[in-house]
Image (cartoon, rainbow, N blue to C red; front, side):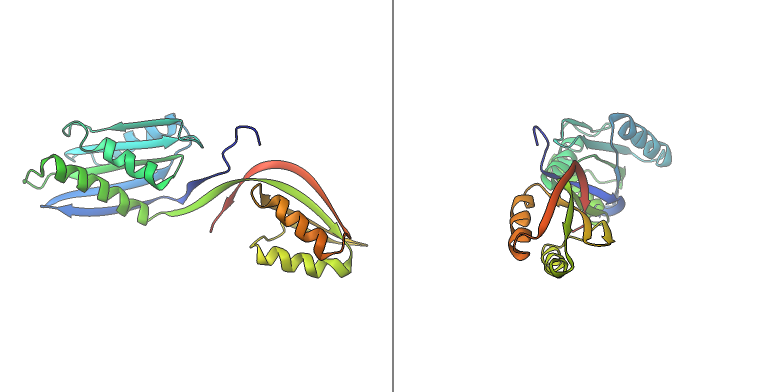
Length: 213
């Protein structure tokens, strides 16, 4: 597996959330962004959409290890907006994600602590409106067995929440499936035991795949 990360969380669908604090509106827009360029373009898009807002603060995390992070207070007191927003994203373990929190000032100053809480809470509301899945590092396997063994293997796969990506019922039964590197060894042993050795398992390739659970 070398330097690959075993798993990390990703957005399957972005979302928007909003809170009101002392008449100030905080609107959080969350989107999947897979590069710094995409994230920067998203921030500019939100600034144009909410051109009349007091502030459009932003944060993003790019890369499976969170290699690239950026945040902006966009005129709010230093450290009261962008950094707390970024901390929420990092705390949730989500990667390749950007968020812009738009503030419409309501006339009452919130103070530094109030701003930190408001921007953090807005991001949490935005994430609550998103669909999040897990990107897992795994291996695609080809599994071949006879008709006596297939029922046992399908039962095992069901127990592990794995659905074959391809099935070929010929003289023998061939299945293609993708398994996490964390469970591959155990699952292969269980398939061999369940079929009393009447199974051929061939590793095909390593890949990242999305687990929606």
